[in-house]
Image (cartoon, rainbow, N blue to C red; front, top):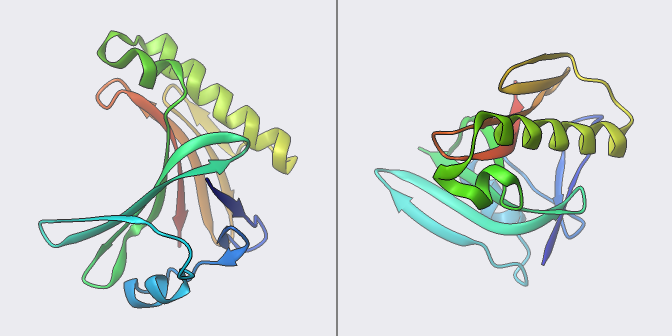
Length: 151
């Protein structure tokens, strides 16, 4: 399984200790070593690259979406597939989603020794000079996730 690492100082992402370039789709693809294989899907002009990764000692589906050579909305998604909301599917409750969001936020706080910048019912935010990390979730999907957004 691939290991994902995030450097809080600058928002850099590493897969198996290889720095990922997200400046453009071309630079992203060129930054992936040959021994690392990502799944890909093209849908309505959006190029999606994804893989299962280990992050914060938990399994996530990591997704990069590019449109016209740019990272879509300047965001990287990590969908947690071990949480109550994901495993219960449409039988999940708001309480399940909130517990999952709280758990992911707690993992970030412990791993990086940080405090959240803001929080509400369905998300907890950690804001930095380079962007933000959001632990969020919804019954629509149903799942909890971590989104890394860049300014």
